[in-house]
Length: 186
Image 1 (tube, rainbow, N blue to C red):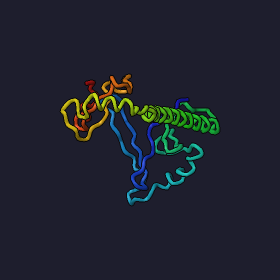
Image 2: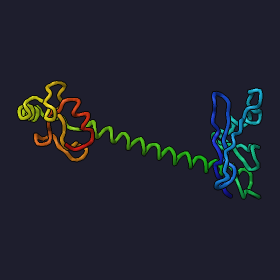
Image 3: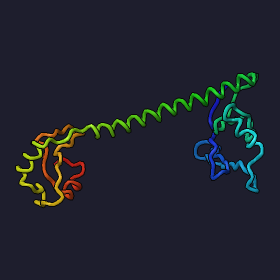
Image 4: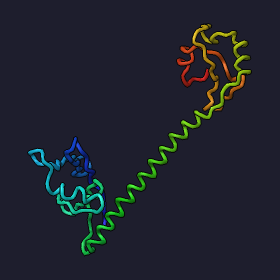
């Protein structure tokens, strides 16, 4: 038995539709099936299976061997002789396994994104002693343009690239020079 997802049910407002790719290679084309009739009313067969398919795979006559489960349209092949109960359980298992895999990947991505945020938040502040030393050394002005307005303490080598909060790695730049520096080391 082979199960594959051929489409997902999407919604434009409250009107359901699905897109199915037909053909192979360069002759592939996508067909949109509107699951609503010409009067804008939702297909009665779809209405029957919509709510039921949340808990149980339902045979759907979009094409032979198609089932709906969790807003996915699935094609089932080589299921001859398989008892219906076993077939429905295998379909349900296949979909739930795909959803669990997706949720795990989604959590991992979320963790990676949060890790970057927390690393930035954990960055140590420049001590007052270092700030005073750098201010005196750089004479209270931008080391690039000499401006004394909108001054900022800048890491010569960014923390993320291994820089530190020591006097040797801190300089005074005006806001404009600091923004133009970007990710360049200078």
